[in-house]
Length: 363
Image (cartoon, rainbow, N blue to C red):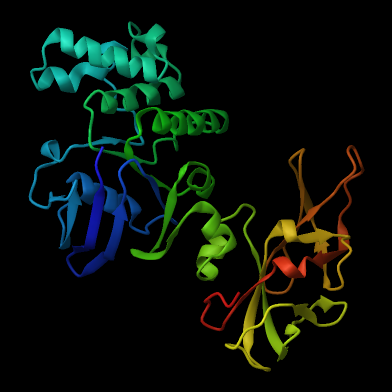
């Protein structure tokens, strides 16, 4: 395993710039996840690291050495793609050892490396099978095993779970986390699924339109987002936002109001020298901190149209509140009749966030 450093990485296609100066230092053995909406540049950045895309500007260092002009095969990286790309006429063992065979690795050494990778990935019983005899999750493990046998310095994963069904995605997340613990490799993982990012990453890199919005641990991004984009992107269901106005700022905290607020102005008991009475702000509150029929002093009343019942939790959806949808949690009695209509929802004021007119986090 090796460290990885991206220095001022930029990528242009003619006049179109898709990566706008990406800087990142990855420690040995760290699991980094690039996350963001489609078209944000995360897969392009990964392809630049492995050498499938040229750099317009900047540099890439692996183990402290620049690989900008090094061909992909000599960079010490292995990439796992969204598609398994297994040879259908080869067995699992032959697929996993194919790259070693092409490099001229002796048969006995090849077999030893394949056996070790199969042990790590629990594929020992499947080595004689062909890809058509495997499930989707097993095929993806074979693709990962094909990367492991090369003993790369850095593993690169480009949305490897997106072709799997929901149950297999959960299982493979566990497999990847276990693999990382077992081999301690440096891993860079690309996904548009923030749940994958939250469950797998040591640190997350949030990208938007080719720019880094924030880098941090999953809990840093969840509890201390830098701006509204990160706050809204990280978390499921996503954060609720309400356009609001500051009524007063004092030692007691910031008092705000907005259309549809019931129970009087909402007092957020935190100080801010950056705000003054009359400022336009945005109140952010996660669904778990906006509770149907809660006991707080202030809240909203919204027309609930449907419920999402998850067994351990329940979420009420009110799509038509003000400028956007509102999602709130509820402590429901098992097997209780699901009701819709106008319902009161109460804020947990101590867990609310506030964003200034530019979308940056105030607190």
